[in-house]
Each structure stands twice: as C-alpha cells, then as structure tokens.
Length: 388
Ligand code: SF4
Ligand code: SF4
Image 1 (cartoon, rainbow, N blue to C red):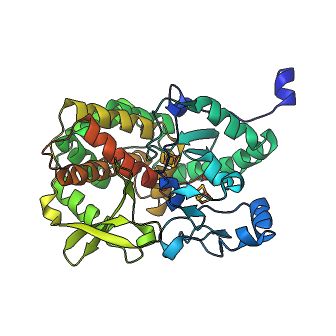
Image 2 (tube, rainbow, N blue to C red; image 1 turned 90 degrees about the horizontal axis):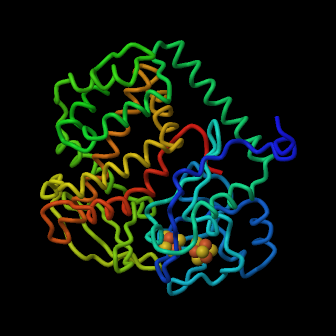
C-alpha cells in the first residue's frame, strides 16, 4: 500500500463510460425535471425549514421502491413542483439529484459512474463528463464509498455463493465476454431469436467459457418469434393506468411525449408541465413492426450494446433475474436473455418513433432517438448493488 492510499483509501472507481464524452444542458429541455427527485436527509431538513421549499415536498415517491420525502409532481404526473415554463425556480437550492443529472453513481463490487443517454445534452460540446464524474464520486468521500462498496460486496458474494450451490455459476467476465462476441447476433433478428431460445431452453454447464457459450447460442434453433415478442412487450409497456409510470420521450423539438394503451390502440400525447395531456395521434400496434436497420443503424445499436454490457448495474440486473428465477437457469442465460430482451425493446421503440416520422428503415439517427427514449428505463431496471 502506498502512502497516498493510506491517506485516501477510496475504492476503485470506473469512469470509462464517460471517457471522451462531453455534455451541455439544453435550455428548456427539462426532461430530468419529470423524474421526481428524492430529498436526501439534509435536503429534507433544509426544505422543511423554508416555507417556500416545504410547499413542494411530497411524502411519497411515484416509485414504490423509494422511501422518504421527494418533490411533488404537478398534477401527480407532470413536471416538478418548482419548474415554471421549463425553468427551475429554485436553481441554487435544487437537489443533489438535479445537480448530478445526467450522471449516476452505481455501487457494486466497485464504484462506477454511468451517464443517462436519454439526456439530449450528452455529446454536445461543453463540460468534460469524466471530470464531472470524478468530482461527483469524490463528493461522497472515500469513507462513505468504502462502506457502500463493502455492503454491496456482501450482496454480490452471497449471489456468487447461491449460483455455485445451484450449479448455475458463470463468471461475470465470461458473461460479458459472451455478449461482446455476440454483438452481431444481438443486433440481428435470427441472432436475437437464437439468444432468446438459448436463454429459455438451454442448459449449459456452469463455468463454461465465452467461446463455448457462443457456440451453443449459434447452434440453437431460432424458435422465438422476435416480432411478436416486441409487439407484446411494447404494448404492455404502455398499458399502465398511472401516467407517472409511463416512459417519457423528449423529442428533437424538446416536446415531452408519452404513449398509452387505450383499448386496442396506442395513443400518443404531448405532456404539459402541469400534467395535462394533449392527444396527438393514434397508432394500431401491429403496424409498428421491427423496421429493418441499415448499416448505420446496426452500428449504432452495437455501440449502445457495448455501453450496456460494460455497465455494472446491468450485470447486477442479470444477477437480479437469476435470483428471481430461483437459480433455475445459468447466470449466462439470465444475462444474455436480458441483453436480447433490451435490444428488442430498443429496436421496437426506435421503430415506433421512426414510423411516426414516416420512415421505413432505421439508420444511426433513428437508433439514437430510440436510445433517448430507452436509456432512462434501462438505468432504472431492478438490480443488485445500488445507485447512491
Ligand atoms: S435532460 Fe439533460 S439536457 Fe435536458 S434539462 Fe436535464 S440535464 Fe439538461
Ligand atoms: S428542483 Fe429544479 S432542477 Fe430539480 S427537478 Fe425541480 S425544477 Fe428541475
């Protein structure tokens, strides 16, 4: 151990997702002001002590998993109580969550900072996200981060023990390596179908190598109907009575769009700041087939898959699914199934947006729009480990 480590025993922090990326907040976008910010204990005390701020406190969060106080949403599913004409009225007192956006700090067996690709400001010339991420992680202090990592490590260690006992263990490195080797398959209908069938019906031995797993996937019959699954999952995504739980897409003109299943149709709405909705069109779900991707579209999808595969929270999601299924399947099946499912979801959402724009195929731009619609939800998937 070096002297510097003695002074600063901070756990390993992975900022690789941020490397080479810049960001500038876009005036009047305010997408992040639709995601009800939680109040940290210090913030809650400060908010309660100031009547102007206290008026915006909600005792509950739209997500049942989040306990404690948060900021109220206007009309229960509109924008933050403190947003007015797309401007924050308490900018200097905004919450830690608001200041951190579009960055998220995930704690698993190490600390990792992710960037929310639903934010349209990512990629614009501006601040260096690696520097912002470094500052954000350092702000928690080495002691807090070490404690959080120690606690998450216990969860991951227990998970590994459970996998081994059930005979379904797979190293995280080989699961990630398999997805890397299957990049082309996971962006192609036949490859996706094989991967889904492998995830649901195969029975690989534990601790298989990435090469063995890839061979097994490629030998699997493509039985899963990808278009049908995309349609079923897509319809289910919008079949929620509570508008606050629907995914929001911020379009290129910065309109907030939500989609909802009404009867047998998907209805598109413009969401207003106060929570009102204005219908813009109706879509027959079967008309949104998975549109063909051109080379640019496939390359953009592969690029996104690489980002997802490098996220510790996504590995944690695979672990969560493996646990949820009672360790009935090999971890590689849970992880590959999750990768395939999420690529299909992205593809379907990109197809929906492209159809609305009158397009018949998906290029780089259309897949990136799909990512803007999708990434917020991917980062919100249940996982082991935690965002802090
Ligand atoms: S989503 Fe990004 S660009 Fe939009 S307001 Fe938030 S930080 Fe700014
Ligand atoms: S406090 Fe301000 S920045 Fe934060 S969500 Fe509300 S309006 Fe947006």
